[in-house]
Image (cartoon, rainbow, N blue to C red):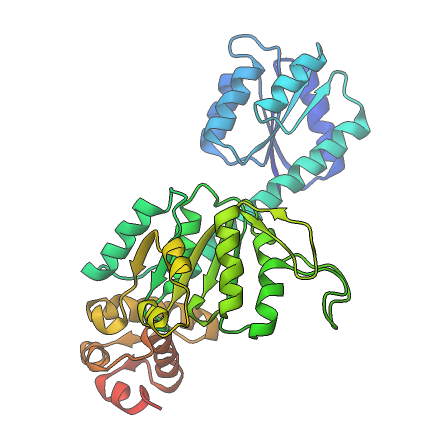
Length: 387
């Protein structure tokens, strides 16, 4: 059910608007206010999906009301209505954030279409907000240990800049989470973050994946395809497991970073790109350089800032929080009743050698939730934690 507010100083017009909206959908909840202050008072008490607001009103006029709504309730759609409509006023309202501007007397079909579209936009904005919240929750960094706190502090300092970041750490330690936090806290957060797992793509296809290709560039290239660099234009490109990239691809990535230009496979035209590159690896790149497997010049381009993510063995004091966090998620995902994890179980979990880090820990928690009773004990951990 949508909540709609009409702010209009003429009672007859308020009643007409109310009746029109009620006939359109009797499930709408419609309130009205005779002036701007009364409307804002109602908005302080109740959440509205749409506001229809007159411009010429005594006291606080509609433009002032619009400014207040955009400041306090930016997700609410506002449609301005005026008997003195002119293009300059309409443009000013739209610039200030109004969804639309309608002249009095309003055309019935135009008004109803505007109401429907404005409500659809509000619903879409709400859904996007919920999805973003779910995504950000997916990438939560759980724990207050000193080593993890250092990583979080580094993210806060580095994220707002354009500096390239090399994220280093063992498999399963959460390097992807760090990359997502760097993107979400950056000025590029409204643009896409494109991820490439360099270890999962065959070396003969990595260049096409990164830079795109033209139709006919190779046997299976049946049409032009944009690469990840181009798809990430204006946003962030995350090169995961960069240490597994072929030397030929490394050379092209280096050129792209130096010149901010790419050339698709089979193409001869350069494409300008604006991306911030984050890279991650579980390898010792200095050793890879010494062995001739990684370009030193690319390493220096990527490692303006280096963030080292600790393995779980280096932050075992976070295990109680991690156990609670994953327990809640697994309970929700699997439809299993929440379980108590007793102190002996926590001690047993902290005694383990977590070579697979957070990824392994999550799998163990899922196994314990499925196989154990209402309370997970130290004995349960010893019995089920290892396959």
